[in-house]
Image 1 (tube, one colour):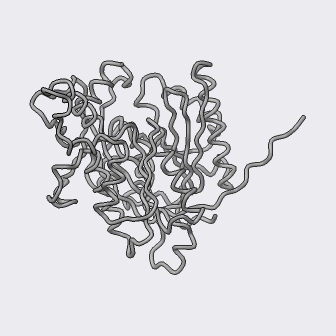
Image 2 (cartoon, helix red, strand yellow; image 1 turned 60 degrees about the vertical axis):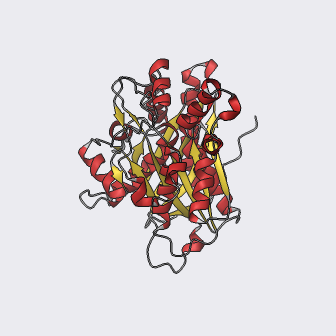
Length: 376
């Protein structure tokens, strides 16, 4: 009987800076405070028209002022997703000395759901379809946030948008990691962005896809990724190292058990590629609990992949920030970084962290992070 070839180890990449905007506020420190307190109040939802109302679900909008981070020039032309993505990338770039050779890869579920819905509605309610406002059209494109971010910050390298529902951020990190290691950019800003709009909120509400007692949120988390060789001689250590990012798919028609087994295989493969064992994982940030019925699938997969004998911290970011869909996994990564940087917590013994997620379409994935001073 043929045996499977061992997974080839892959080189790590450094997370050298982070730009985070969420219901907790702006930055890793604000996120760390909220995670420690177990609650983020969030700002006010952005309803752009008087006729747009939200359903009766708890909402946790990102608490930030776009004009403070981006300036007022051209702000009215940006969708909420554009503002979140551009502002988060700008925060990450603040810690980068030379932005030359920097690309952008953002994960999202759709882009701006609100912009798409409003533009589509105008084609029906305007006197003639061609009387829609043409300046609104760019915001309906899925790659609007990544494209407008590159224009605003004058980034001329790799530019990509990855749509993948709750796995979008993991797909973006994986894409960026492979692109960086292939030498197509010096640095890549990679992460996820998701806006909160009345249209998306009603979709969650009407479909019943949101888990009970879970709020709807929004946010963006973007990380500046570099290869370790790029950091040689740098005066400051990276925030962490991304050792592996693995995604997969299982036919959901075969049952949730098969999806869970595929996630278990993803975790085991990622740890093997990272040169780590399950015992090395000190922090787990699961991401499926915001979607009705999927928390149990994810937990069962984690129990199969990680021994129960090891004492590890469960970082439940969704309970603090709400269900953030396409930005969820990126905010989970940000939660890990915020925990490791929190001076009020003693996390010196925490060597590695695991971020996981699975979607209702059968997509699964995980990312493995290690502390900056950990051996690789």
